[in-house]
Image 1 (cartoon, one colour):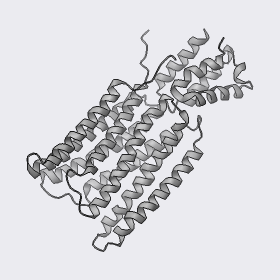
Image 2 (spheres, each protein chain N blue to C red):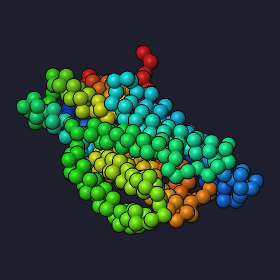
Image 3 (cartoon, rainbow over the protein chains, first blue to last red):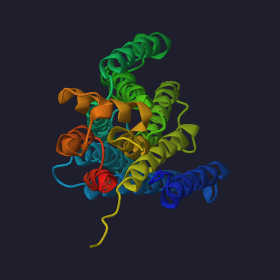
Image 4 (spheres, rainbow over the protein chains, first blue to last red):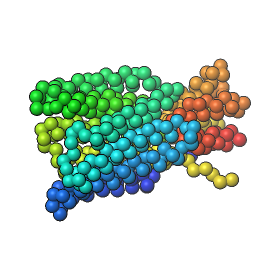
Length: 271
Length: 76
């Protein structure tokens, strides 16, 4: 074989350092070092730094591709999705750490969190459709739609139905309580399943590797979001929640996928 | 001696896996009214163009250029 496309050291480093940073933030928050205000600052700023780094790595990969390349748009879209999440977190941090207030739900950060789904979903779906000429895409699409719709229905029965029936929950909050699980299943889980079914047809082909990391990350985000919805409804969510670790690791995995895609760019041989 | 088809499959396999590499070569052969084993050096332009078209949306351009260069190098 002329070239083996194993994952590079720098990609493993992205995964290792990202995971380590996320765990350190989580441990510091749980340990409560420096009291409540410091813990809150560490939790919020730690998330911004870890996920901000993930956004940087993803955008950097996107910009390595030429302007006409499909991969540039796919990864740029995913990167913009992560940037929107970071912006939401920055606003959240400003409200909680600088102003010392409880971030409202729904609030300004939700505008950013809500819009990220469109960009991430588009990036992953367009990447899956790019395989149209090479592998079957119709069956994977149908399978992912069926599983995602079933998951959305299950989430409605298990979580959303009870929140909607709760008279103490405001109308706007209820609207977001419907939006987030729906967006998680239809704009994150569906694209993730779609691309994982598509690239599974590549077997051990190296082009499948980046997307496997992305799917792992997106799945983790969808689970973290669902747990957050439940915790928020029960008024149990606070700094140091395991959900925060889930979000950070989810984005670290997506950045690892971006780095693995970067590994696939064969350097030009100088003449 | 390895045929052109086999050589191209070997070059594509690390990127897209055995099955898809095989499909890529057979699709080119079919478009030329041939079987994969009948592909020859003269079919290189069609083969290259098909590789570029199919991999274009999913692989980095530099990598595709590298693959095409490897295929060209293989038939020399």
